[in-house]
Amino acid sequence: IRTLNRTNVDQPAITQDKVKVEVVANIGSVKDAMKVAENGGEGVGLLRSEFLFLNRTTAPSEEDQFKTYRAAAEALGKDQPLIVRTLDVGGDKPLSYLPLPEEENPFLGERGVRISLDKPAMFRQQLRALLRAAEYGNIHIMFPMIADIRELRLAKQVLAEEQEKLGARKVPVGIMIEVPSAAVMADVFAPEVDFFSVGTNDLTQYALAMDRGHPKLAVLADALHPSVLRLIKMTVDAAERHGKWVGVCGGIAGDLLAVPLLVGLGIKELSTSVPSIPDVKACIRALNSQKCKEQAEQSLQFSTAAEVRDYLETTNQYVV
Ligand code: PEP
Ligand code: MG
Image (cartoon, rainbow, N blue to C red; front, side):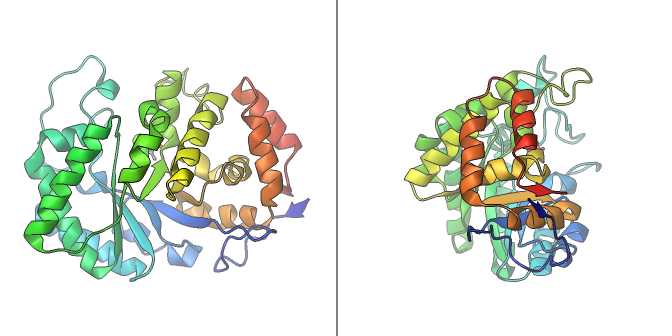
């Protein structure tokens, strides 16, 4: 049993038996981007681009967006990856200047990439801004709420057209795995992406059919539920067969009880809030990856999230 050492934030996160895991940040502003390096972050695994679009009366222009993405890229430097997720509104995040029809079930309605595909002018502006900003850093583009391969193909088609028009260079393209269909069909998606990032917040909500913001249900909607773990496992297995990497950018990436399990499942990148990066790195350094694998295999066999949590607590490899 090791005690976590949080002091050496600049050291990479490598397990005792030399398995490297990228520890990167979830950010929602350029200000956050400037704090990544000092907290030991090795890049950004999720820039929620919504921050540029929310709380305003008109959409941000291509130029506004370009400047912001460039500033974030420059804050990270040429090498550190900056994964920018395209606009993920709808559901719980309405936009005043983008009137969407009233929906009975907004979380099952037009949200994420569905809106982008439905409003191609706005989508193209965002993609152009990103492709231009990619000259200044290591930008990756990620599409949210992908449920069906046709959505990915359409989004990639639009991206390719804008790239062509701009004469811009190609950037790595990935998708969020946050809809169960995408996890189940990960073998179909894997050949057509560069990476996957598991959004456990939505994946849990959709796997268990429990609203992530519901006052009573949210506590039961535990990302360590074996159903969610099995979906992650399917995703990793499919990705590995195609030589692609899988990260996690949902809340459990920063849950120190979950980190060993995610490492054991073969997750290569954990993206978490800036302040929790030192803890996550310290945790990984205390781990033995073989033990993590055993923990993952065992966890997949349990029936409830509570059993998984109890087991992880009793087999913990470190003390906080
Ligand atoms: C997720 O769903 O896990 C995720 C990271 O995206 P968001 O929380 O922004 O929906
Ligand atoms: Mg999500």
